[in-house]
Length: 118
Image (cartoon, rainbow, N blue to C red; front, top):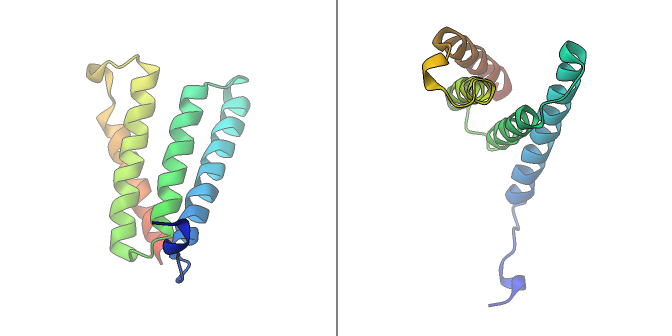
């Protein structure tokens, strides 16, 4: 087997890479800027979560999975991002999770996914 055998004549692979890279850059930038504005310092754990969530979101958006699929993925990602951020803040104590906040984040993520998928 040689690397020449593995080609992407359709270009779909690079579309996914670009989507993930753009999403990661947006997540990273917004996290750093918003933390500096609100607290004057940066929690790099939160930046890592936002960067990862942005990469996943960008990857999903670049797949063309459609409106409903994008909404569902956005909702799941929004809720998971909120829960992970809370767990980092409360040192992994699942008893301190604010489920209303997670639900709101999931709803916002769903709506954002619908907008991105349209």
